[in-house]
Amino acid sequence: MTSTHPLPHAQYLQLLDLHGRAALDVLGALEPGASVPPNGAEALGYAREHLATLQVWAWLLAHPETDWRAYEGGPPPTAYGDVLASIDRQRDQLVRLLVDSGPDLELDYFGRPGTSHDVARLLAHEAISVACATNEARGTAAPPLHPDVASDCVDRALAHWSEPGADVVWHPAPAHLVAADTGRSWWVRFSEDREVGAIAPGSPGPVALTLADDSDSLLRWLEGYRGTSPQIEGDTATLRALRVALGHRVEPAPSRRWWRRG
Image 1 (cartoon, rainbow, N blue to C red):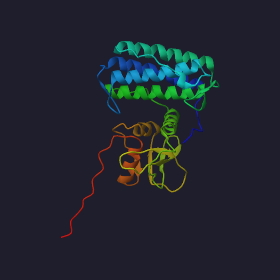
Image 2 (cartoon, rainbow, N blue to C red):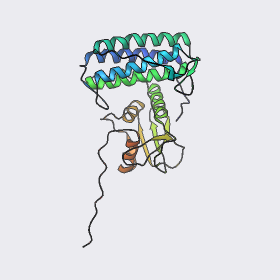
Image 3 (cartoon, rainbow, N blue to C red):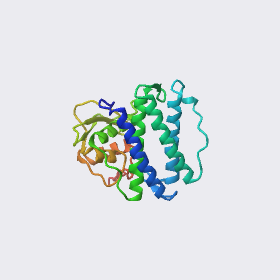
């Protein structure tokens, strides 16, 4: 599930700025206790987590030769308005750092070699995700995504969530995810465990399940939003197993009925 079609560095910076500003505008219109989908986090906690993400990457870009474990973040602001103001400042700082560094700065990407281009991609997708979630909470439309951008988000999300070494029971055949508008597709191994799961890169071949939709809708389905319904080829139990593996909130699995013999 590793990307073979990353977008240009400058485009990621534009996406970070556009969607980051849109997300902040909507966060400012929400009450601190508002529920933010897809997992129902309170807006204040959600904003503080977003700020923490921006802060650690700003520090790593400013200290590219330092192990990420050396980072010591200070306590986050407690007042909602202060959190939002810090997000605004931190986003602007990140854009400046990424412009100055260009795409080829080598740094510690959380324990593996990475570049500033990887960071720009991550932060652009972070901004897109926050804009989508906050607009969903408010009932408004997020900035539209070009199909190539949405496909890139799908690609990075699957790679980011991947756990090839997870101690789970893997389904013998992968799922096949298809972005109908870009023609990109992904083969995804997934866990068969009933209540826990994991995903990992799969190989082309016979599949257990196929899901197809436009890139933006496919991304939203993968992230667990309601109201998205890709075209599905496969049975309900296999679809549920994939959703568990992706961390979706699903209804408890039906219990088996045991019949006494009379």
